[in-house]
Structures are given as C-alpha cells and as structure tokens.
Image (cartoon, rainbow, N blue to C red; front, side, top):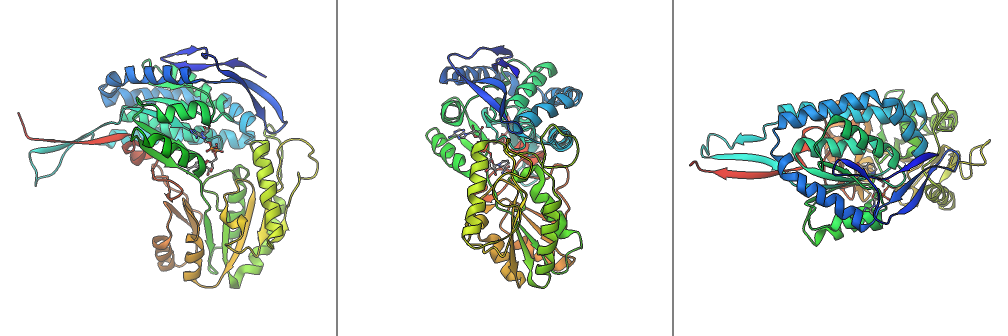
Length: 477
Ligand code: NAD
C-alpha cells in the first residue's frame, strides 16, 4: 500500500487541518492500495487563499512564459508516463496497457494541443476596421475550482489544468476521491515543471465536504466540473449564490446509428468502443440503433464480438477489459442489467454476476441486449458499465428521433457510406459531437455536450476560451 500523502498548497506539500483517512480501493482485488486524507473546510480555504494571492502575478505573466511552463510540464509528464500508468491502473482499474496508451496518452495530447492553440491565439485583438477605436482583451477569469471524475482521470485533469494555466487562471484541483493518486503525481509534476507558488493547488476530498466548499467559496470565480449530471445540478445551485461561471461536462447516452449501407466493420467497432474502459466513458456509444434490413445479422455479430471480449485484472498486460471502479458502480450495473431483463429486452451476451473464474474484484460480464425499446430503463439511464443496448429502426427520421429522445446530448455516432445522409443526420442530432464511420475527433477539436450533458467545451482553443473573460476597451489616450 502506498504511503499516505496530503495536499499541495502554495507550492508545498502540507498536512490536512483535521481531515479524515480514506482508503483507496484497488477494484481488481478489492484491497486498499493507498490511504489519502479527505480535506476539511480549512484545507479548502487555505487552497483558495493561495490561489487568490497568486492570481494577479500569474494573470500578468506574459503568455509566452505560461506556455513555456506547459512545455516543461509536458517533458516531465512524458518522463513519468509509466509511474502515471501504474497509478491510474491500480486506483480505477484500467488495464495497464490501455492505461499507458489511452489514459496517459490523453494527457500529453491535450497539453500539446493547448500549447499550439495558445501560440496561435490573439489574446488582444482589434475589433475590426468598422470600429478602429476598439480592441478586445481576453483575460483570465480568476481563481478556478477544477473538479474531476475517476474514469479518464488524467484526461480530465490535463484538459482543465492546461487550459486554466495557459489562460492565466490560478486553480484548486479536487480530483475524485476514487482516483487521487494520479492527481497527486500530477501535482508533483507541476512542482517539478516550476509553476509559481499558488498557481496550482490540490486538495483531496469528497463532494459533500471539500467539493461543496470549493464550489460555493466567494473567492472562487469559476468552477469547471466534469462528472455526473446529478453532481452538476448540485454544483450549479451551490455556485449560483455568488453567480460564478460554471462550466459543466456531464453524462451521456450516445446513439450509434448503423444504417444498412454501413461499412462491414461498423458493428464490431461499435461493440468494442462500448466495451473500452469497461464502458466507463461519458461518450460511450451505449445505444446501437440498427436499420431493420441488417438488424438480425448485426445482433448475431454483436453477440459474437461481446463474447470475444475478455475480462482481467488491471495489472495483466494485453487487451482485455478491467473491473469497474467500485462496489457502488458494480451494484448499480447489476441492478440495471436485471432491469433490462425484467423490462423485456433480449439478453444475448453477458448478464448479471461476475464473469466465470472471478469471485473477487468488481468485474462485470460484457453484456449486450437486443430488441431494446428506447423507453426501457437501460436505454434511458447512463449505465457506465460494459452494457450495450441494440434498438432496431426503419427510417432515417425514426433513427434521428430515437437518438434525440434522451435528456443527454454529448456524442452521437453515424455509420453510413452515403455522404448526403451523413450530413443531414449530423445536423439533426442534438449533441455537442458527432463522429462518422469510426473517425474520431481531430487534434484540438472541442469536446462537450448539449442538454443535460453540459454547457462547456474542452480541448484546444475552446478549452482556453472557457477560462477567459472578454474585455472591450474603446478609445485612445
Ligand atoms: P460524480 O459526479 O460522482 O463525481 C465527480 C466529481 O465530483 C468527484 O470529484 C466528486 O467528488 C465530485 N462531487 C460529487 N458531488 C459533488 C458536489 N455536490 N459538489 C462538488 N463536487 C462534487 O461522477 P463520477 O462517478 O466521478 O464520474 C462519472 C460521471 O462523470 C459520469 O456521469 C460521466 O458521464 C461523467 N463524465 C463526463 C465527462 C464529460 O466530459 N462530459 C467526462 C468524464 C465523465
């Protein structure tokens, strides 16, 4: 078990002021893998005070210097990739190979995109020839609280910290209590990269405790939150008292529309995408809508693909899916699979209980339901596990209607060889992102949702702009 460490505030590792011990559980073994401290109001206040004191200096630091520090951070991060992968793998259960490539890789990717976007960004620009006396200054919002989930931990941390730092905000990061180890390692990297004292602070804690203090604090100007829609609602209410800017990246229930002219790999790709990270991705394509003419064949194929997905401990090398993050999630997923059965969906792969050969660890059987109706609970709720729902449809209009019939609007996917149809459907889907034929978003493309999936956009220039105020200056002295 790793040794207990505490918080990074004002450029130093400090002890908690009265916090309680919290065991971080390795989901592969159900054994504790580390002890951290859940902070108190006093800890959160100390971090906010440090960030507030550092803000004037950091916002007026030339952007070239801020970018140079991110470039140094990238070097440090790349040199510690293995340590980071091990931390992520043990605390949230990502198989080690996947942690090295996808989980750790996402962090470098985002930081590099911020450097590029910031170099191209005009922080001060003229309004235009029609208003020669006016210019626009983009300046940092202020002190930002950054709250992250456990499922893609370094992805979320770098998306927020990189953007806030480049923009000139100072910050307090509160990572998920399920995945604090990688965030603490990241704080060491920020220190090694040489960020000035107080620019970046880290306090561990739970949502009701430290989370509530940090999202309601009068000296915090902005909250950037990624997590569940449930917590997003609570945070919005809490932040409303001081009218903070609140940026939300929340849950999803993505549709993957497979038309009858889809390429031959579309179904397999969709099932494997759903199972990646053990289904614990906000943008998981959890509802596969299949056109009637190819539906039976697609169901057969999805069953075979799901049955070929192997499950194993996070420490094992190779391609498999790991456990889900904790017991609460395991129980929730079991209940939802049972609901799918009870409500009449046809179970074609997986089901309740642990996969064969496991009697410990939060392992879930890769599960596929066919003949799902979009009104069923499994089609409406974000399951956050390796569970796919297949829904037949007849026409393009019906596919769009089903896809949009959800409170979420994060990512939808379309598989068709017909360019006109791809364009029409992409325009009608109410989601922040649409991905066609297995192509993923390009470098620096904005990530974020509509409806109850949130209101912000992360990554590249959009991510930086979320941490900037727009100031209009008119006239000359
Ligand atoms: P969660 O909402 O339970 O917790 C997320 C973070 O919020 C944690 O750090 C937690 O301590 C904190 N928190 C919880 N309640 C809070 C409160 N009242 N005040 C302040 N902080 C609070 O979510 P989770 O289980 O960690 O993550 C899974 C969820 O995150 C899923 O719904 C998933 O879709 C979503 N997610 C969204 C995106 C996106 O970009 N849209 C990305 C990843 C995950």
